[in-house]
Image (cartoon, rainbow, N blue to C red; front, side, top):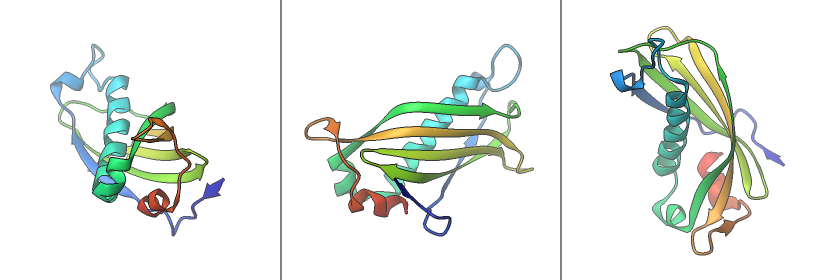
Length: 137
């Protein structure tokens, strides 16, 4: 397993604004919305950092999500998401996401997602090579 050290990790940050449609019957952001933000953040990171030629060669699919919900978010809250890829093993990588309130820095949720790299031409798992590793670390 290739694990990146703190200096090698290329973090990516993105902002979200809680919308009324994100709110559940308890009056706070629904857990499914946090999951959507985790995926949106990963996709934004890939599209922002990977060269278009690399994006055309590969796709990512989720194998597993682990999410810890720590605090609720409410209508109008501004949320920041921070993400980085923690490690690579074969065709898999583990990505960390932290979602927090912009104005206080309070962490709302933390997620670890296992992703699998697919070769676009075959839609089969592809060992993660340097062209992908260099995007993330």
